[in-house]
Image (cartoon, rainbow over all chains, first blue to last red; front, side, top):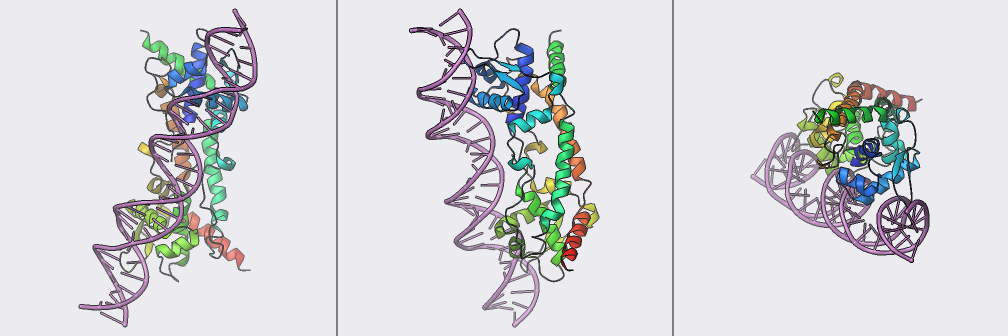
Amino acid sequence: MQISSRFTIAVQVFACISTFAEEHKITSDFLASSVNANPVVIRRILQQLKGAGLIQVTRGSGGAAIAKPVETITLLDIFKAVECVDGDQLFHFHENPNAQCPVGRNIHNVLDGRLENIQKVMENEMSKVTVADIIRDTSKYIENENR
Amino acid sequence: MQISSRFTIAVQVFACISTFAEEHKITSDFLASSVNANPVVIRRILQQLKGAGLIQVTRGSGGAAIAKPVETITLLDIFKAVECVDGDQLFHFHENPNAQCPVGRNIHNVLDGRLENIQKVMENEMSKVTVADIIRDTSKYIENENR
DNA sequence: TTTCGTTGTAACTATAATTATTACAACTAG
DNA sequence: CTAGTTGTAATAATTATAGTTACAACGAAA
């Protein structure tokens, strides 16, 4: 099981906005072409990012823009915006372990805390990377191409 | 997107073996009843754990047993055994980002290292918990019930 | 050596999530 | 009003998960 491509697509959206906002209007079609995905898929991701307050999308005339200072948006913010995980739980239990069985009725007691901790460590690492970092690296790589 | 229940089921398998091995033969039916899942699903997980050298399964007469000292088996070992992730990559990219687009052709350069790092941190945390810890906690919770 | 319980695995189904696609009303700017 | 765009519904295709039936292969014990 992998984390869905919505997440990496969403990150690419930020990189695109920052790279091209001055030259192009950032429409869902434009983004879809950079990602090589369907414009409707992009629009849905844009809605999720907008719902989290990370971008703004202009209806009618079109165009997406980043809504907050890029140093204040982390990969974790993006992840939580687009990865609709059931109750924010990364790990999935099989439903209804057998309460007649001593192990079945205690498996959550044993695991919940430890799994929560693993998830927290991962999220903490995600929160260390900001969109500013992504933007800086993106322009660095693009500049390196032009020599 | 969540990590599949195979992982938590597999952990429960170890807890069951350690808790009941002396009283019962650990068959797929017995495990299926504790987990409340289908025996064939359990047998498939047992095969994955066996393939990773973590347990042994006796054909014919039946029964599963832990194959290595429990302090040497970590949650990461179990995770890697049952979670068949494409190329060990937790994060999924949309295929074929547009190579005509400067951002599209550099998104992997920008993200691969950072995502790998996030995954590594998570795996490192998983490797800190051993089956011995799981077993200890399980008996602790079961004992606490009996007062 | 026959019987019995079990594993290993194939085949098929059901369910759910992801991603793509078509279509169109609602909206905004010119 | 027109053109281009967003927001969203509806539908389909694809993939992964999980359940189920079935049965050959196997091992131990009668």
